[in-house]
Length: 262
Image (cartoon, rainbow, N blue to C red; front, side, top):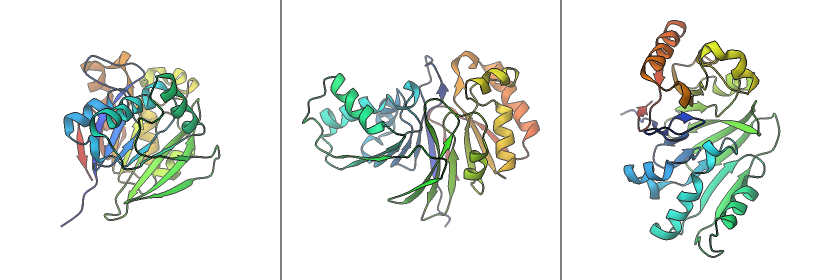
């Protein structure tokens, strides 16, 4: 029996919330989160997976990628009374930022009965490797402001792997990091017609994602973080059709609560 790596998209919209979609967050199996945007806690409660999280990898310190962690921590304080440590991997200042915001929102100093185990990544172009429970996690710096890291997640038991870009314009590090992965989850914030604008503000287009996936020899490409300004049925259909014409393998339009098994 083949062991599968399970990916559940909790939040998939970019930059601004919609009435039905929430900010970036991806659940790997039942215990690892990639990003924790607003809405993550509610989705985890809905799926009955909120008490199984052991590790959170944050790509960067923008509102739509990490502010959901505070509702999650308050849930652990008030409802589940968690005592098991929580590992948080992220960019420089993630430990200071999270602890400061906890104070600013008047979290009692003794509220959390568990350790926040921070792994603060270095501002370096070298790949950084973290061995966590059932996973080998590799972080690679990409091009976005503030400092942002893409993550490669390899499951030890199955040898399956995926790469998540976070927010970035197209860069060589994504190709290097994702090479050999089954799945690339790539941001596609702006449509191809706004490529210059997208790159100026450190984002990708669907065509950028296709090029990266092709060069890395990826079998499955999932597009995510499409800006709320372009989230209508006709535009999304067009993006998928255009991407499928350019990419030889499978293109997936990520949606909240969609599950993939690789």
